[in-house]
Length: 179
Image (cartoon, rainbow, N blue to C red; front, side):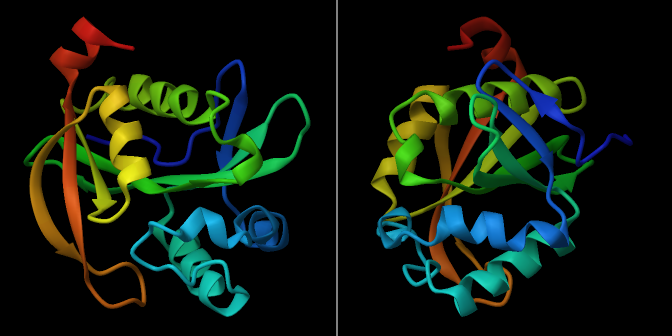
């Protein structure tokens, strides 16, 4: 099934706009706080040279977004669609991060709802890779309604494999129990 991996998506708080090469500096500004990456499998991603690799992977994925705060116009983070599997009728959402100034203000839930509403027009399952030590993200994705279904080693673009938990939301459950 063909669908756009980089549509412009919007909700009350944010605009998700396709990430472009010219966005490096504004996105790095949002990503340069070490606190963002404390629980992440790659704890050094706040360093510019490490973030450059992450950014290259995002651009090459052709499914990455910059997240823009509608109230301020500021780029506050990034997320992406990846690993679409037609046979399993599923796709992943991940590589998501937000500037610390946006934590606890509803941005993550609103972004995930918008992305899930879009994806469930095309697939029956959405999955998420979350680092095994990333308790903050595990709690957040559980609040969206995802359930842990597996553990697997994941090699992020240009990085060594790290243990991740796989979470999943099924379309039927999303429609029935949407937060």
